Image (cartoon, rainbow, N blue to C red):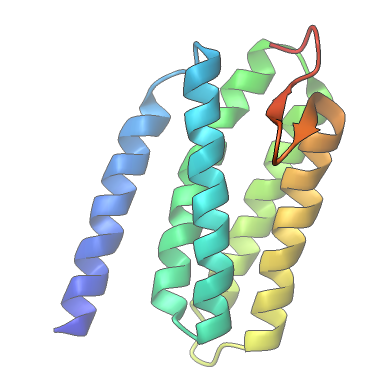
Length: 146
């Protein structure tokens, strides 16, 4: 029964994320919504890996992957090659993490390190280049990016 619920949940998340990925990011509000989704999924990913809920962690990886697939054309259209590289690197890191989480025996320490590295090296790198602000004042694009 638990397996059915996990599989059904993965399908729902994938469909919702897929529908979101089908659209383009046309407004700042859409971009902000996607970033909030990434933040929630990344937090849930780290929590799931920490508690050994690897199926749940893989659902969060699927959400992040779909969101990053939406980010790829966003940055490509704006001709920001470094951001495209960051997104592609993030996708590679997510693929590696998904493979790690899908193994017969999961190395929890390695998975936790990979999840933390994804957030720091991918999200952090893009924020450093293109965003300003903080959690209290809110993040926004640097002038001329959007």
